Structure formats: structure tokens, C-alpha cells
Amino acid sequence: GVCGAAGCVATSWWAGVLPPPVAEALGPASRSGAAGLGPAQWAQYAGAGALALFGFGGLARGRTGRAWVLGLFGRYRGTVRRTGLMWVNPLLLRRRVDVRLRHWRGEAMRAADRSGVALRVAVLVVWRVRDTARATLSVEDHEAYLRACVEAALVRVPVAAPGASEGTVAAAQDALTRLVAADTAPVGVEVFAVRPVRVEYAPEVAAAMHRRRIAALDAQHRASVLGSVVDSVEDTVTRLTTRGLVELDDYERKVLVKDLTVAFCAGRGETGP
Image 1: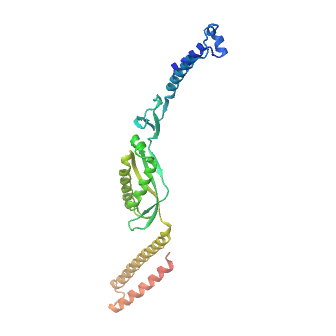
Image 2: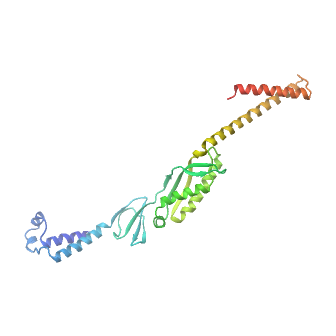
């Protein structure tokens, strides 16, 4: 590049077209041998200019976490991962690729739980480009391909429904991660984790699932209250008979148990939530 620039200056001196301040600084000798702009001077200008453009045009700055995929006339010529100032053949086509660890949070996608109930799931994907050549050349857009793989995995893997246990959630995350990692490996993308961050029922089934959950909670509460009442009645009858306060036959025991059960249930219903 410096040689090309020096050649342009030398040609200008030869043709006598240097700027007046420069010509005066060089003295009369710079004007005595002026040949003017002719075919030879233009040819020398073209050669020196091409050399300067080729030299300075190849200067590039490599950054940490970025790489260049190089190609020449459609053929892969290598990947540059160096950092700092460097020189790359300007005839090579450069494609910049981000090779840092990245995360992507998508919009809510369709999914289903183990019972087939429709869900809407937003996932967080932690990934990076491992093979720059495959990520750039094997698919048109590796990020779009990653999103498509995540969407396809959500269709195939049952997702833990809202309120599921931690073990069920972890199992679904592991299955999603393995499936997406296997689908993206051929294109040079490495997936570390696929985590559902928001799981909710689809709008068409949300109301029905809400009513079902309320009914399940109510049934659970009733079962808990009934068990507590039965334990209290059994303890009361046992204490009365053990201490000899009352003597009951089978019929009287049944009547007492019934009355106590009704009384305890009524008291629980008045003071309960």
C-alpha cells in the first residue's frame, strides 16, 4: 500500500502535476523534467493506484468473539478468529459470524402437556456457533433454523403444565435440550439449554382449565376437612368410652358418631375459609 502511494506521488512528479506548494518545496528540479500527462503516466497511475487499493483494502480489525468466514468465487477458503489489526486478501468475500455465548428468548409457541392440553410456552435458549463454516454455508440463516428447531421440539416433547413439580419441569427441560441440540448439531450450532420461562394454557382452554383447577383444589380441601373431622370424632368417642364416661352399644355408638360428625362439620364450615 505504501509502495502504491509512493508510485502515485512519483508519477505526479514525473508529469509535473504536483500541487504548487509541494513543487516549490522540491525546487526548480521538480518542474524542469515535467513530461505532462500522457499514456505512460496514466498507466503508471493505474498500476500504482491498484497496488495501493489492494494493500490498504486488505487491512481489517479482528474483534474478540467475532470471526470471519472467507470465500473466493463461491468456494470456502477458511475462517479467521484472530483479534487485532490484520491483513486479509481483499478479493475474498468476508462474512462476519458472532461466536460468543448467546441467549435467545422467543415469543410464546404452541405446545402440549402429557394429557394433550394445549399450552403456550416461551423458552430461553442458550447457544453459540461452534462451526462457523457450517453455520454460514449449510443454511441460509442459522438463527432462523434454531427457532424452527425449538418450535418443532415443543410439538414433540410434552411440556410440564403450570403448577407441575420441579422434577417434571426438569425432565421436560432436559428432553427439550437434547432434542434441539441434536437437530442443530449438523449446522454447527451448539445448544446448552432450552428452558421454558413462561408456561400458560392456550386461550381456548384457559377458562376450562381454570375451573378444573378450582374444582380440584376444592375437592382437596373438602377431603382434608373430612379427614380431620373423622379423626376428631374417633378421638372423642375413644376417650369417652376408654374413661368409662359412657357405655354405648353399636346403635348408640353410630348415633353418637353421626351427631359428632354433623356438629364438627358445621363448626368447620362456619370457621373455615
